[in-house]
Every structure is written in C-alpha cells, then in structure tokens.
Image (cartoon, rainbow, N blue to C red; front, side):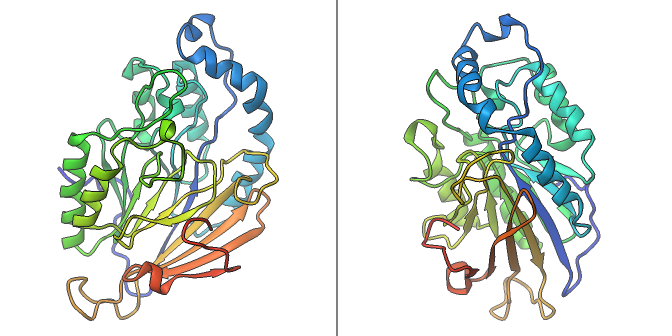
Length: 326
C-alpha cells in the first residue's frame, strides 16, 4: 500500500491552506544512563555533550519555542526532522516518546544520526516512535491534498562520522510514491534528516547517496524538501530540478549567529482559487509561504514562492537569499 491515510484526509478546496510547523535537532537532555551504554562510539559523543552540547542546547529555549508554536491555532501538524536524542539509547527513545505524547498538535518525525548512533534493538528504539513515524520508510501522511513523506537517512556510522544513507529499497519505493501522488494532483512534502545537497555539510556528515536521490527527484519531482542536521536556517535548490530545500536552526540552540540560532519554520501551503490539473499547461501550482520565527516568536524572515517556478517566483523579506541561505 503506497498511502497511509491515518491523518486528516479531507480535500483541501481551492483557496484553502494547510499549515505546518517545522523543527529539528532537539537533542533532548538525556536521562540517567547506565555506563554500559557508552562502551562504544557513544563514549566520544558523551564527552562532547558534557563539554559543549549541554551548554548549547537549552531546554528553556525549546520550551519557549513550543509555547510560540502552541499559540498558532492554524497549524495542522508539527514536522520534526530528526535528532531528538543525543546518543540513541533505549532510555532516550522512551523519554522522547513521553515528550511527544505531551505535544499539543499531531507530530510526524524522521530519525537523525544521533538517533541511530550505534545499532540498537528496534523494539527498544524505533518501535516506540511508530505513532509519529512508521516501521517502514518512506511513509506517507495525508493532510487533505498535501502529503508528507518521511524518508529515513539515519544509519549507524563509525567514530567521527555522521553521514546518512537512504538505500535502494527506500529510493525505489519513494519513486513510486512520488509518481502516484503526482498523478493524483497531491502536493508532496518530503522530509529527511540529512540534506540531499553537496556543500551544506562536510563529507563526513553528508548524505552518501545524494546523487541517487537526485535522480529520483529529477524524474518524479516534489514540491518541497525539509531537512535538519546542519543546525542552520538555509534555503537551497536541488540541482537543476527547481525543488526548494529548506533547513532550520536547532530547536534549543543558544547561538548569536542569525542562521544558527534556534528557529522554526511556519509553512503555509495554499491551493490557488483557480487551481487546474497539474498536467495542464494552465496549472498554477501550489503557493508556499514560509515564515522563519525565533524561539521567542519574532519574525526573522518571510519567504514566498510558487511550486511551478521556485527560483523565478521566489520572494524574501528581508531579501537575504543568495542561492543557499535564507
């Protein structure tokens, strides 16, 4: 079955909107963990967390951001692009599941590299997150005529590496999903942790099968790709595919640089009033409006475009987009 229709599935009529909040890289403070969990690659990450990350990712910032998101009554769902944990332990998966249950709106997630730091029993880790994701990837959730597709790029890696890998099985299934949804005139939102774009992170942290995913996207298209991993608010384009790639600052990050400070993306997708069949030359595409907001709710940037011509229709306020960063 290509589609999971467990989410809201009423048709979005002409002029109606679907709105998401996009956050990433929460790095929730870990609970007390037994030492046996660190007799592997996690020991290096634990040292870095003690020296740096726990001073950078502050729960108070995350809480202020969630309060700002909660005040927005128009949101259909919260999209989370990975790294809820620091070490990917069963205890952290359980803690994150409890946190997810407290959210005031439906949430969808994909795992990040920290969530897959070392191999761990699925029953004690990913199984606990299935209410917000799925056992098998890619998965689909429908919100009217908008579909969110979750792709898993998180794999265990050797020490000092944090690269991602999707694999042929997921890519084959993704191609079929994108083709089917396109035929149904569905707006497709793809989310994964690692950005499928060279240059947004170092080779040791990048997506290994970027080219393979690029070929699928070139063939079938998609209207928007969301990612995390870089801890930066960025806007770029997938090769020559005219597909926007949107990143976001880490949810709890304390940082002075505007691109790296904690932020969330409010993504509003509108079906134009005179929407036509997407196979028709008179199609007007989908209208996107992205508002990047700080944890305190300040508007940092407004970005608008039409899905038929991302680069040609792109408008930003303030006008800071330079082909890579918003």
